[in-house]
Amino acid sequence: MSNRWTQDQLTLTLALYFQIPFGQMHSRTPKVIELAETIDRTPSAVAFKLGNFASFDPDHKARGVSGLPNTSAADREIWDRFYGNWNGLDMAVQNIKFPTVEPGADRATPDTSFRQTETTVQTKARLGQSLFRQVVLASYHTRCCITGIEEPRLLRASHIVPWSTEAEHRLDPCNGLCLSALHDAAFDSGLITITADHLVTIAEPLRHSMSADVFISTFARYENHPIELPERFAPTSAFLDYHRDHVFIG
Image 1: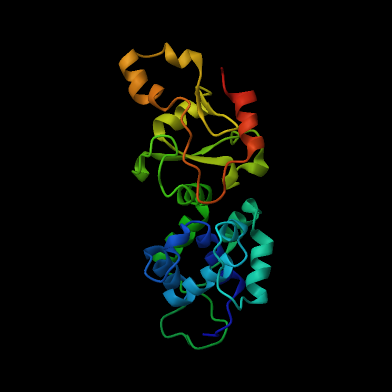
Image 2 (image 1 turned 180 degrees about the horizontal axis):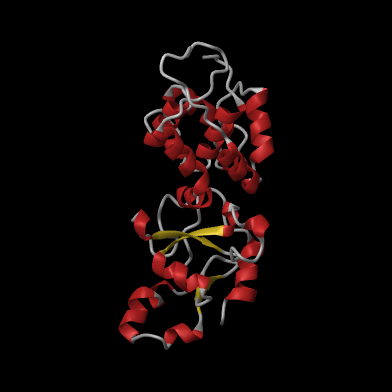
């Protein structure tokens, strides 16, 4: 195949970039290996591209870490097109087509696209279908920002401004918090909120809705404690203000 990266390959790699923590952007990470197999690149090549994207990332630069040098114009173009354009990135991933390659077909032809396999389809679905969840969980290192719970099956990517309110913010990871299923339900119902200083606040009705022991163990112990802020995509102040003003029941 051609050494030139296609737009589709770069788009899928950028989607992956946002879905793994900075410390996992290397060739041994299972998700990197899986994507490499999907797009007919080596894990090292995918890891190198992830490093290129890190060169553009303001969150990465704010940590005092520079990405790899010698990025390409194509890398920059993809970054500029989709950074902050979460709806556009999700749509682009979902619209990528993987033409079927018949057995015995010439695989050496330049611009031959990706292999159509069950793994390919599943990988693309994961990269786009749950983009918001994966980006939010990766930013919080798959840990509830209130309780520290680390079991992915018990975690939710909670919308700060509700999904039904503003469509343009539905996939914005700065509109997300990683919460346990219990605290996600409480946050979504307005029974808890987060202050401008990132402290947990509890609504009065919640105090009287369960026994004292249960309330203390599940909510009171976290009251006025700071949430664990993410590695990147910190919750936007305006979104937190909206939740306190329009969702929290006080």
